[in-house]
Image (cartoon, rainbow, N blue to C red; front, top):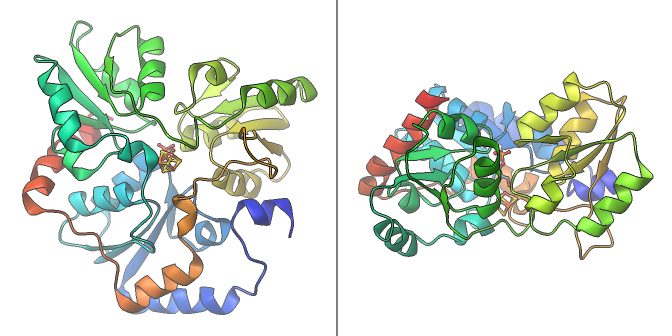
Length: 321
Ligand code: 13P
Ligand code: SF4
């Protein structure tokens, strides 16, 4: 098994029959398949739409198809369902959660908001629908800066749940948003020491960092941005080598789009493999994708009252960006 296949969760078995079955079921169901860049390569390859969290939300809001299969994690499926409640939103593995979303339980976030009266509440899209329902404006890593900058300079803001993204936005906007103390276990796992070594070994390489990484890692970056922004940066850069400091699924898309460049995954602290996988994202497999189209299950359901309140801050985000 080569390193790329391992990082993309590929098994080496012949997947072509499964892919054909998925395509056939997709037609029968009138479904579209949407995939996040952190999905395994085989899923990215057969998706109708692939993107970062912002792109997936936009597509879910606009799409006509009656069935969406959201290959990502639970909050992404929930966002699609909130934006398109009349559609069936399927997810290959309903247990695919998110450590960042889990770091912000809605009841504790409600108490945090109560403790900061007069603040506008901004929440990262990596949250449950119940947290979004407590929020004034949702953001993604692709538009957080723009949304914050659209507010008056003296506006008091609570930002949750990612302390690293919040800290990054504070640093580039000069704001002093009050931050919820949450984080993503994947992006906090990158080893600063091993990254410094990599930078020394590849002095010409550009360093691409997702803003969920802590500040010392971000300080080594040539570009800090969402998965889509990092891909765009490669397209506009003359560099031949890139050190990629985010979840390893993005490497598949980078290598596919830019085969003449070299992409080096930044290693996590505890790994012999050298790349950093989100175990939640990688719960989705081709088999589970086939099964959900075959069974029309599992489907995302959101409490109607929460859905109503959660839609407003997501729509506001789409309007502002
Ligand atoms: P993007 O906003 O780049 O899609 O990131 C989503 C995510 O879950 C990062 O860990
Ligand atoms: Fe959540 Fe982190 Fe996985 Fe993104 S990479 S889905 S923030 S656990």
